[in-house]
Length: 67
Image (tube, rainbow, N blue to C red):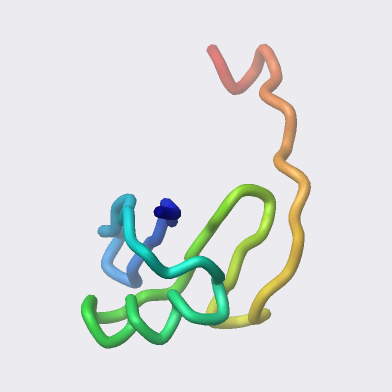
């Protein structure tokens, strides 16, 4: 089982737990199941409608973020 975090164009989304193992496979599945999927994440890899699949480095949280 794998978990994926996804977002839609209307600021909805969630986490899905499924038997699909890769971003390449889960993106079409989520697009068929939910309207307007624009981003899917798993670990430090993400798919976006603009850029496709890429690795990303999370931005560190700063004191300003917490204020």
